[in-house]
Image (cartoon, rainbow, N blue to C red; front, side):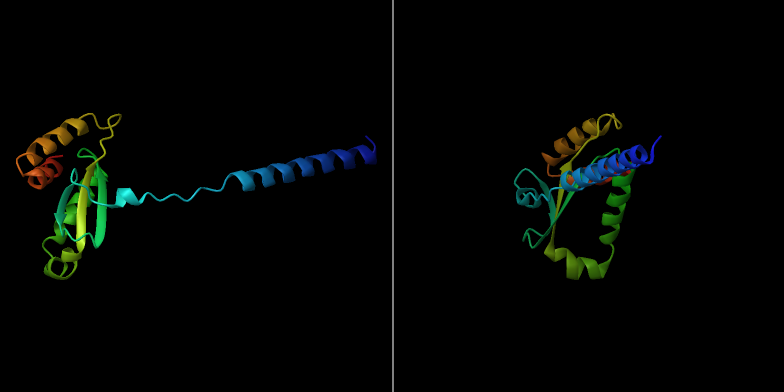
Length: 135
């Protein structure tokens, strides 16, 4: 091949790479989203600790998920910390919302229904604790 053809091929490849890189950089920026209505406690939510809504901690959880179980144990452990209970807890509204992952946790939805039934009897969080303990 001639020097002119090799230069043309290399230039075309570099130009194509530059174009693809620029296209990727211009189209691959994630869009920042925020949904303020999701950060508020509603009447349908299960809420504990403070009702002031100064700081709202919303947990989306699955009763069969091991990671969610660890988080629930950590949150429950905070209840035994006297400093947390007196100084921090009065400022935090803890909101629990169901997020059963049916495809990997086949019993999660049934557990959520059981917790909701307990909630109708004003015992949602005791049932919540039992479900995570017996996971």
